[in-house]
Image (cartoon, rainbow, N blue to C red; front, side):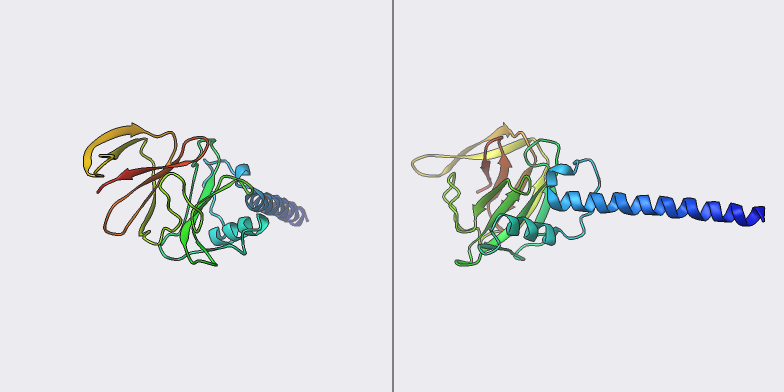
Length: 195
């Protein structure tokens, strides 16, 4: 009889722990969908579907009729802390559906986003289409080297080292020039690197 009671107590304790674990996992999943800001960067969180998360953010911002996720480059979604607040952010390659122009959309939270290209002119360099995109990867280096051009001839005249405040996204042609996009605290900037 004591043996049966002992087994019953162990079984109940196990089921109780399993129920708490399910509740914790459910809360973590919901907080990720609600807002990336609720997910600490240092958590090694494996999102169920990065594509589903981007589609959710596009939908809640009424952007799902304008943009769709592009599969031009793999991977097409990157996650890290782009704005330096210690929280997880996400960027995806998107296509503006009406023009088929490519670009990037950064989400710092479910309602804070930045579109570069994809039919919207990126004021720094005048892009509205990134159909040349062949390289799309994270760059954690704070020290970057930029190409300096002559303002009249556009010839390369020098290179100089600059410090950037946050993790950047390396973008470029598959075989050709490119550079780095990074958040400066207010907006995304581009550093041209290479020819």
